[in-house]
Image 1 (cartoon, rainbow, N blue to C red):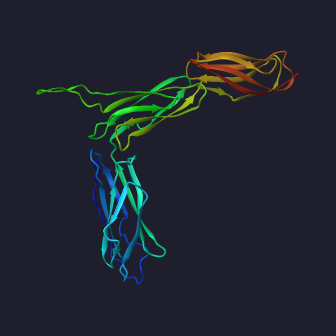
Image 2: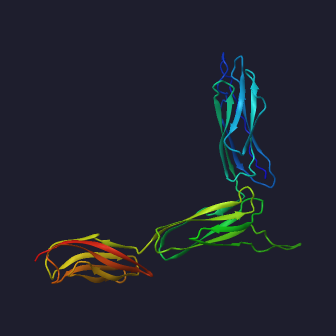
Image 3: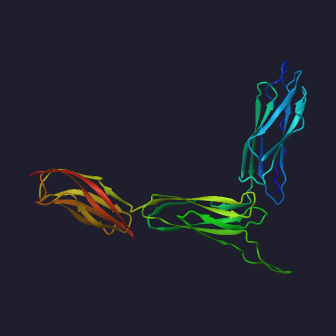
Length: 343
């Protein structure tokens, strides 16, 4: 794997004269090493950037006591540990990414001075690695899914460079089903050669999800494993938001006052998008009977309350119990009832 990047240098200005050793190593100008568009190939080499450091003018110069890095992928070398006054030294930062499993490099290198209270100068190290393969889209979101429904999605894994990519296996969580197959283009023909088969470096991944009746969200994932040593595995999140019977009930609570036995009290209106059915409507208040009417075929209904002679006078509190159905999906709903009945 060859990782290439443009070399760079940061020029340092001469600092004022100091009578005592400097507690901070002087890095003038941008104090960062940026590696951009690191391409992966078949052999490993290091991408090298360089930063020039200089000693503050003074009798002692600058001595580097320690060089630290926050990323194991970086190797840091300095050609002079002690920099005389007015002179400079070169710090070389190399990236070794054979075992680096991310496509982004982000870390710091610290140069520490040899003082009783050492002060370290940070240097940002950043880089973007062009991945050997890509999986598109990088995540799957089914959006709103009705409970009980089966939905599918497709991802394509393809080569993103010169190195052939082989999809070896896929592991998925239990709530989704994932299958895959190789996508091999048609054989290519030339006048002086027999048909040659294009290497299998593109794959179709199919994801299927059956929405359960007792869940609200889907948080699943599947992991692809390839032959790419630097980053053999990649995890793809799969999400969905589950919904049930979609209908509105207006109002949310039925309230009435000074009603009498034999009256019909205004109730609720239920509206859906399509194929809506009211399977059952019951009232928990003795002597109150729901009256169902269909306003728009399998889409809009009205339920009023008939007060029979069996209803008790005074304040009444109860519920309207409903069973609503949309296609194969059936759910229970309830609406509160608060009223007063004259004798």
